Length: 80
Image (cartoon, rainbow, N blue to C red; front, side, top):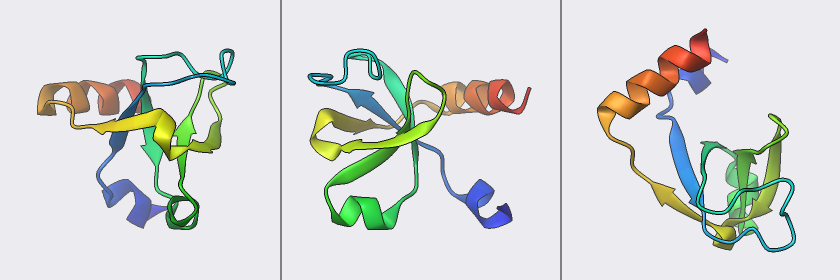
């Protein structure tokens, strides 16, 4: 668990929620969790609207680089 916390938190915007209208909001930014096995199969693991992490087709997302201030705010809210 300690190793995972040192990994850079990644984010992705949902660019296509077709087939997942309840689970994913188009144009919303989601936290991406590392999952190398999933990525090998064209999948991405995100924390969706349920608050749980699930696998989705990677083509439905675009990775985004958030400004440092936004990353800090996210970390402070996630720790609360």
